[in-house]
Image (cartoon, rainbow, N blue to C red; front, side, top):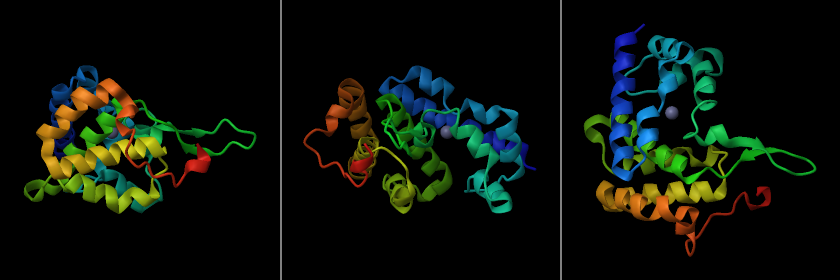
Length: 194
Ligand SMILES: [Zn+2]
């Protein structure tokens, strides 16, 4: 059990997300990001499976095949695309990713930037969040436009850095929403599901 180390990781992560959310004007989300990590179902697992540089969910999953802490977390935090998986409105409904409100896409982006900094430490570069996304993206059940917006921000961060990307979020993304994608190529691998 490493409750203090886990607590420090959660606090440090929340602090980074808060500062970056404030920079783009998302005050409430900055203050409330990941608060459920202090709840007992999540905190006890985080303390038990604490490992430097890795999510505690991985440890719980290795042991039981699934993570109760993660299921608890993603069901309560709208900045995770997994929160938005629901049945389609069709004759034969199936589960798929719904289009996320833009403010939560931005919070998801900030979450990934902060997590990459904590997990990569001194090896962090602005390319790390994009590299992490590229390793995982084929497994994601996420709406095409939400994916396109997340990719746009991750690629922009990699090439142009935080200052430029945060200004783009503040002045364009949070003003125009998904319209910032118009004229850009949206991967439609799941187009039939929309
Ligand atoms: Zn979270």
